[in-house]
Image (cartoon, rainbow, N blue to C red; front, side):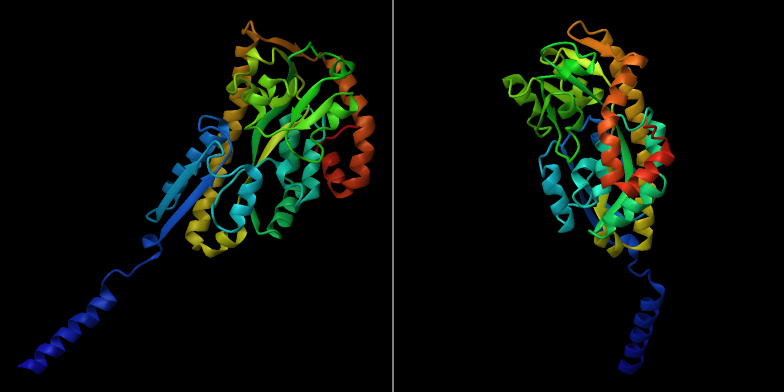
Length: 336
């Protein structure tokens, strides 16, 4: 009796091994960490929240556990790139300025008055220039998932209205780090000073600098109206985020998870680009009604004066130092 019973048990075990559901990609656990320097209600903060939601949906049954650390609670931008490369975090979105050390051609995006509209920037980023940047970043184990619009740069100050280029002379202006972020101010006699976004409000209040370069969204969200009453809507360059993850980490994931990330990233790009454009318009409208702010909008003729003056300096630099990128810039609509 013992032998038939053992045989039956072995047969049932054999059948269970082949018939029972096997562990699949859906049972894998994917802990993923997002780190950024802005508050959760900023466009970048909302975009990461949206991406986490999209990734959970597109990943199907896979166990995706996403943690988001905003407001530099985990890392500042420069530290985050290094942390990404050692898999301490998994998604970041620094500005292009922070990555020009890896891809020098990214520095051209900080040149003032490169294009007149965001469509031209999109054309550049979605064409051969964007493909080139993507390949160069991959050499540094960085996978570019998308370029994100963060709005046009403008400048404010606490001293006087700035309408003409000479009005900038003598002002000290906070800029973000980057090879070419201070070009506009240096050229017109102002003094650019690199200060992190986290430190900026305090440095403005203390008078370490008396002006700052920001998007309208950041100006409004940081409530700079009381300490920076003179706002010039210059639209002199578009700030771009690079949505990144580690290339090696991406390649370690299942094909299904890779596809889920790509789909979620594409949807999030559409979301943030729309969000930034609409919020930018709304905040300009609100600021025009704010009695604390004196807004200067450059008339077409005056704006053309700014553009032609600065391009006398920047066009030779573009041709000499960024010849590969310069060709793509011309194709996208640069008009020196």
